[in-house]
Image (cartoon, rainbow, N blue to C red):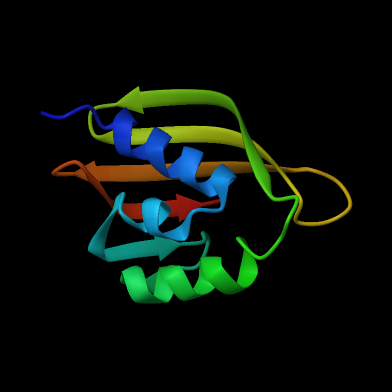
Length: 110
């Protein structure tokens, strides 16, 4: 089994560099993104995810996610992050990633 932490760290680094191409390279083509408690995904596929991040994240000049803590269990990686640049104050966020075949297949953002 490949190290599930590796693609998660690479996407975090790309996120902080605002590098959309490098960011999306860590995700499966058919990635599903969830925002619980919604049962249905808010984004399906790299194209939808890329459009969202291009228009709502990487266009924010002060956007930065600081990793507070990371847990790994099998192919699940859970990050606690402090995200700044979205508004006046930093936001505490939890991201859960399911890594399959070296790419992020599913993500849940709380």
